[in-house]
Image (tube, rainbow, N blue to C red; front, top):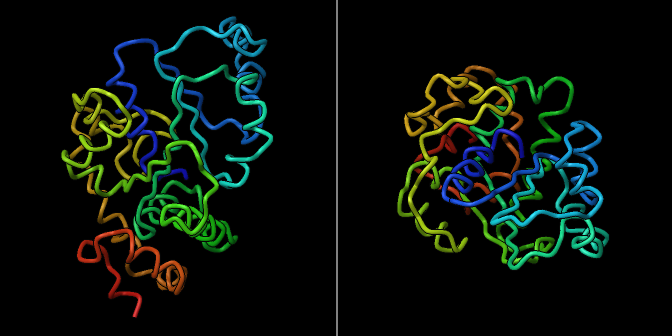
Length: 243
């Protein structure tokens, strides 16, 4: 999902790959991502990939944002995977989840979601579907699924090291302090803390909306609270405000 820390984690993964690494950002799920890219950016290298002349890569990251998991892991895409992007020696499905308090606050701050037009409610519904997959209630992602808690990734070097081991990359923590420019960087700080990303106050973004009743009403969802309490550290988040 947008504003879930995905670009921070993607940049961190790429920075620890010394060889050629590609990142395909937000193509439509189930379609050929190279054809999508070439339709928007007429670069020769995208054309070659789109027609099946694949270059050798140490890493190919395809990042899906705000899309349903059943489409991302669809049988159609699996059937045409090697035709669309080439064969992979190893594949990982990485699912990134951020706590709903700060995720929704960041989406509201950046105007990606609004309460009054229903888009914030749609984001809540999508978050819950991701949480179900995170907890194993659904199984749409089938290739070495790794579920990443963004809150823990941001604050714990040990957590990042364990993730690097799971991804079979040599841990250096390179890229940890970078803020990527996608979407303008942080919803609250932009890119001004680039080089010092660990200073981002990601657990307290909700405080910008703490006096807005509709913000709390949106989060008073029994299913959402149940999932959030099972995935995130209760002591670091304002669950008591939902009583």
